[in-house]
Image (cartoon, rainbow, N blue to C red; front, side, top):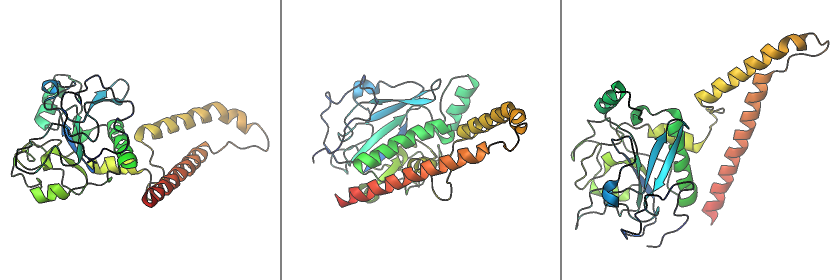
Length: 280
């Protein structure tokens, strides 16, 4: 099966590239399996022997995820149990992403008590979820991976074990399209990561604003706008009130109106692009 589309996520480092060490199988991806590393730094993955497609490492100072790519997007990775003679797992038309951090509440509490900076992915900060969402959106636009998830993201440690209730059957796994976790993969895979990761929220961010949520501003955006409005009014109110025939501009209304107009245009452009892609 031939690879199609761009094979490198823009901006991802190839400092830990193992695509030349392990040939793997060529695929046309239609799904993504998400993992957590259960550590706070970029793993070595046994020099690539158990590496995923990409690893996302939190940069807390910059409030960004730093991406490291280990294989082409459509080259089979090596982070799943993949038994000979069974169903294919690593080779099942999917990319794999490891999120540096933990899904284990006990580990989270221990690291938090020790002052060890980390992301507890079931309660990930908004900036981290938006970074994940940007990747999800890019995969959809460049490889058609559906921005959907129809599985149950069960909290760890209840998600652990080959017979955990959320784990898919072999047939369901073979047919799956969209986003799922290590906890859903069958055939000897017993890991429970990434726990009750908020994939629903990630997919909302990836899809962009909706009619039900036309502003779709982050909490940080709202705070910045509020502070800017207050600062403007504190500085200008007295001077403006003294000018006959002029009133204080409605800055809040202007900001909200402008944002809604811009996001509406962006949403329309995405719809047009989607229609064009279907027509190809």
